[in-house]
Image (cartoon, rainbow, N blue to C red; front, side, top):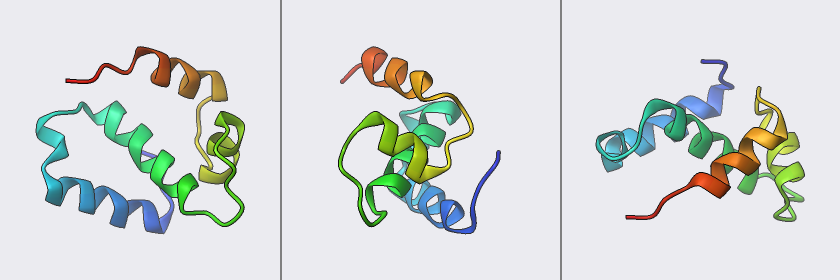
Length: 73
């Protein structure tokens, strides 16, 4: 997984919360990038900002599909 140094800390926090029991590794990866983008200064809430600010390796349409297919339980 292509991570920045602080991505490891976010991932460790999610593991501590036990999210790995409920979500797959790709979903956790998306969540790490989303949280990284949200805590970045100047974030305005668009998918383009999520993609740009979090250094997400996938195309921004992948994030859009992730939000479209996200199912709540």
